[in-house]
Image 1: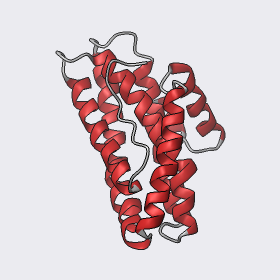
Image 2 (image 1 turned 180 degrees about the horizontal axis):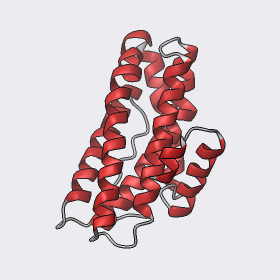
Image 3 (image 1 turned 120 degrees about the vertical axis):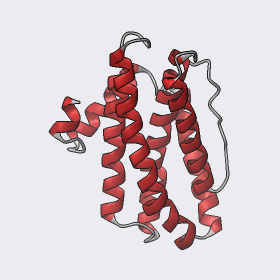
Image 4 (image 1 turned 30 degrees about the horizontal axis):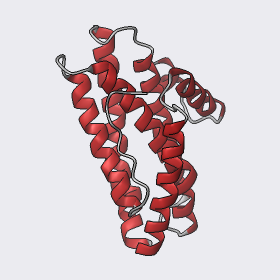
Length: 184
């Protein structure tokens, strides 16, 4: 798996759990930019955490928030499109042979740009309504469902190159990636 320990919560308020992962992503991006860090370990950890996080959101959280009228169809689809864009950027990073090249640094910056944009939007347009329009009991139930799905994906080595390729291919098939995303 990876030398970086990925937290594995099993329960909690889904908003808090998702925010905790967002902060983990930010730390791992800082590590990827640091020439003295174990960039290979940070890349592997970010890949696993990011894929597990997004897949669990799309399977457990977004549909439930739609059913509760906390988000609408557009917000759900936009979140899924941004996940696909981030996964494409992640795949480009995973396909870099080394961690000490300009190509690697450029791939880190593209992933960081894509991911930070998504985090900002998700925290405002999805997590804020989840806080205000969904009961604490439901947020706790969603937290357990999200964490269970996320941890199961981590157990499946979801950050591997092959797994990420499959996730990106599925997004392409579903029309979630524009031609521009596929070429970058």
